[in-house]
Image (cartoon, rainbow over all chains, first blue to last red; front, side, top):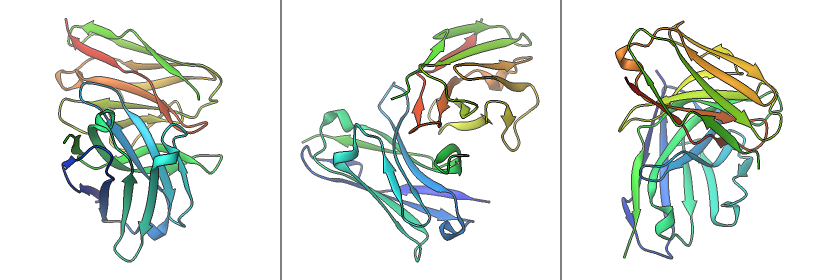
Length: 123
Length: 106
């Protein structure tokens, strides 16, 4: 059974960098799929942040691209998110998820999700 | 950016009734469309991908249709566990989600 688990600080100060890790169990990241991050501000909808292929190639939401870095550590079977220069608008539940590979070779539907972790940006 | 819209925002349905949810894309996404169900305090759950393919373990009462810019999720006979928020997501371009439709008890 494939499981994903997010971890990281629940409170980040404005202007600092938010860092989260997603540990994957039951499946080897090296075997394929895209691995992505999605966030959801309290009471609002879902926003895709970015995705990484098992090979390490990435693509990001253009509105966040200048602040986002996603990386993969196949030796630990985990992938990570860094979001720099955070503001209160970055307060959200952050989910990691596994994505199908779409026909065009890009990130497709997200079939397995972590439980999510709440990150609050506040001084 | 491909903008996704969903209607209605809220759908009130009695248990056992049929629910029809709509999703529209601002430009064609072919069949690169997924539907998710989200309950309070839980992560989204994939229901449908490729516009009409049920994900593993999803009951047959959930069905998806459409292509291009117009899509529909149908729940043939609502069960108590189906009251939730439903999101559509396109992945023809970089992924974007609709604002959601809340299905509540009439």
